[in-house]
Amino acid sequence: MQIIDKYLVKQFLLTIIFALLTFLAIFIIVDLMEHIDEFIDNEVPLEMILKYYAVFLPQMIRYMTPISVLLAALFVTGKLSDLNEVTALKASGMSLYRYMAPFIVTAILISLISIYFGGYVSPIANKIKVNIEREEMNFGTLRSGNNIFFQDSKTRIVTISTYNISSEQANIVSIQDFNPNNITQMLTRIDSKKMTFDSSSETWTLQNGVQRHFTNSSETSTKFDELKLDDLHFSPKDVIKKQIKNEEMTLSELDELAEEQLFAGTDPRRVQIEYHSRIAFAFASIITVLFGLPLSTNKRKGGLALQFGINLIITFTYLVFMSISQAFGKNGVMSPILTGWLANIIFFFAAILNIVRAPK
Image (tube, rainbow, N blue to C red; front, side):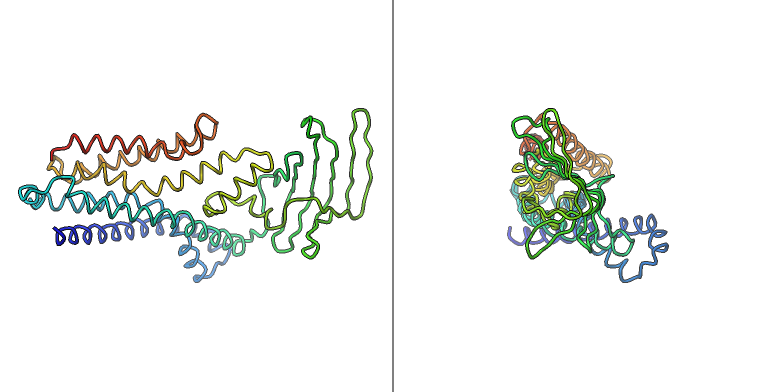
């Protein structure tokens, strides 16, 4: 049986690689046609375009892996079934469970690798991709709508209109402090034209602004040319980190961001959902294999194309269900852990039921 296992695993892996390369080639061609005008307008050199797509591929590999695993499992099994080799294996006493074993073990290993790949390799590559877009396409300033907006503590809100990465300078800054016993009551507000960071003293310096103090019945204001603040809890690195998208953050950075948001008094639910969903999605390959193999081991009218179509619908249903569950989770209906894993739990039990009902 070891010879058969090695043969199945070899064919399985080779088909996965072929499927991935095919999907990636199609993606690059389509994306290049879509963005060719931007590359020409910004006079992006060929080497930079090649680097751009090289760091874009990890994200696509992460998304395409479950479909490639499904296609490979169906193709290998369907080919063996058409040649009556599956029938011969069953006649020799091999059960469906034993036949599925090398595929499942391989899918588990792929899923474990996918956790690291999707949790660290892909986000790091996404950061490089974003840097290329900023440097080569003149996106040197971070923006988040009209403002960069975050909580520095449970009672302090910081708003920055624009932030320049190279000079580490924030422009049009507002810092608002609220009463801890009544969060609707503002105690102080500082408005400044710009703010810079002193790395030696680790303090922020505000320039050309006004500081206001509020009481129940009065307001006092003081203009200043320069004001140093040593009680702010963020650095230039934190400003950038607070604005990057979740897909640019590693699992460790997502975990740290969730803790920081919890400390600042904001709801870390969205970050926690991204954290658990990214790990859960890595196991999508196992779900697709468990669903696909029982259907492909038996000959059906329509052949491999029909089997692949059915399983592809199941796979996309799984992805849609995961997106829907995330929407409910972000609205507070479910906990972040349950939100991330709900699709896997439901489709896993559905796949097990499908295996039990399949002819052995």
